[in-house]
Length: 521
Image (cartoon, rainbow, N blue to C red; front, side, top):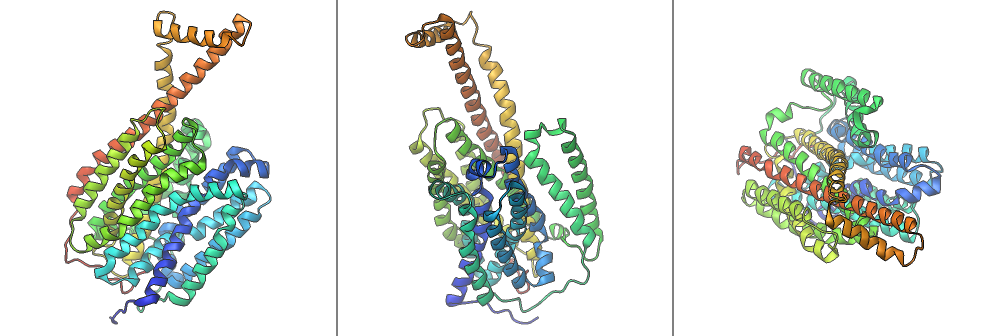
């Protein structure tokens, strides 16, 4: 095997910045559109339900293409695939901004998701190839900065663009950055010295994966709003997802040239454990990131911009500590120790959020969210390294693709399950609160009398006064029900992390074990 040479100097810096920017473009676009939903709806004359497909289509395309990235990098050449994906993402961004109706926008978002989904695993593989094995901890730390900063910057940047420009700029902003990244990749990124070839294209595997993962993502995105299995087509998509994914796993394990080499999970126990932990991290990260903005904006009156500003310091803290944590891990610090600290910190972060009141403010959240920043740094670095430790060649490309897909699915499950859990708990808390509002409860009677007296000074009719008092009481009951449900959701995520701590006991890391990156895709 030929000796592999690693990049040095300014060229190494440019490649590193390029792949991190490319990965962040993909991650920013997963959340940047969320704050523009109402503006898109009004501008294109579409319902909120139709506009939600702008988010759903991107997520479906992402989760289909991510696990195929290793195969496509081998088929097309890693460099060509990376550059082509950036250009496809950039061109689709332009078309999204130019869309004149909602379904054009949904189509272009799907295409954008195809291009963007490839950027995460391919960027990670290129970064690992650029750094020497003894520097891989630093590379992991750098990559993790993008993983955390991207989803957090999205709402902040989106809110600013929508407030001061228009929703189209949520897409146009990608164009100069994408073109610059494509030029830098074309100029500085190189193909591996050892080039693998695809002997046969696994069309059956690709088709089963696309249908199965696409159906699963659709169910997770739309299930709660459609009352899950009370809607016939959700049931049918569930059956399709289960059958096609089962066939996909069987086919990939029995074919000689799989599109997604699932056998790599058997060759690396740490990858298998790391994938479970990555799923949990995705669940917690996206689940909590889904609940927090809804809680502070709907109940506490935060603006989208203020919400982004409150979240940003924690992401910045993760970015600051990622590099030193990666270096310390490379120098021999136990990944179990870092993961234990990170998962305990995330448990504490979610539990503290679950204790908040309606009087909580931005200053209160500042310190709690810093715990989140610490937790994500301590979790992302070792989990990301576990995915590739001990693997060689193109197995690393397969591992990064699988790991990124699992995190994406974890996030989808986190949002779907959390959303459903909140709806269930709102109904339960409402029944519980209403059970105390009776003529036999002195506190409830006193509260209603106080409302009527306050309203009586402005309304002459006693009937109107009573009606307005009942509406005010209904608003209070609804607000309290949602508040308690949001608190329950935070604590449920906290308990999930606590229950998963024993998984760390199964991690086995040989300090002398290195990954052969000489032919990674």
